[in-house]
Amino acid sequence: MSTNQKILIVDDEKMNIMSLAQFLKPHYDIIVATDGVTALEAAVKHIPDIILLDILMPDMSGFEVLIKLKNAAETMNIPVIFITGLNNATDEEKGLSLGAVDYITKPFNQTIVKARIKAQLKMAHYIKTIEKLCMLDALTGLPNRRGFDTRIEAEWGRAFREKKPLGLIMLDIDNFKIYNDTYGHPQGDNLLQAIAEILNRTLNRSCDIAVRWGGEEFCILLPDTDLTGTYNIAEQIRTNVMETAVTCPTGKSPNLTVSLGACSKIPGENDLVTDYISEVDKLMYAAKKRGKNNTCTPEDNK
Image 1 (cartoon, rainbow, N blue to C red):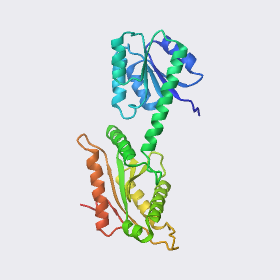
Image 2: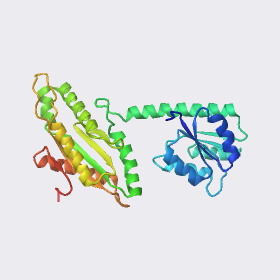
Image 3: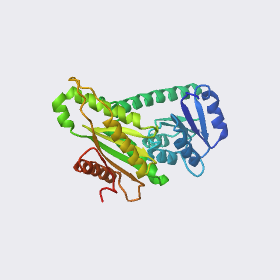
């Protein structure tokens, strides 16, 4: 499998595509589109590292394509460089104001095009690295609340478009304050790391995500998973926690348990993701009120 970075070239003139592809192909994987609709489909399918976009195209202009790219969660962060025959300042200003990272006019110089692509890819890499660090919990290595918010918004939108269920689990460690007070905060940190390891071990699909929500609370996001599947994962997590011994400085390993709320939903047009999160949060606290160490679903909470 190629490890090259991917460039999507969008132009209705095949000669222009061939001209760009000829000198870029040795260094990048090239994807091509000859109209706006195909370009948008290719961007979602391949998630290119950068897009070279013409402006003057039939049916949908490059400006319109850029607007749609920036309004879609999957493609909004892909850098776009306009390469166009429009060489007036007004069009360049419009392109940059809509979110393009650069504007190159035709006829173009190959060396300049390569240099600007390289510069933008380097900048994009720096930004992704910084964003990734900002979205990770330093203690557990799991995504943090900010990372969760970004992911659930994208998955919520995808579930709505594809009419597929989105499973969500919220988990709270039972008696965590007592554990911290008894064994000390460093040991509490060890427990949080152990829970993160259990979550990573339990989730088998690459699309599933476990997050440290905050304090002793965690969230698990399960795309394309119905209530039965979500409940089964929650119960597996609960069982795995009970069977895991976290050794303390005293040598004793107290029994660990968690309380979980589990739900699954196909988003409707008027549904809000914030309401969904709140619903699952209430289910988790209902599990605690039922005596802890159990999983509560909407069926249980009727």
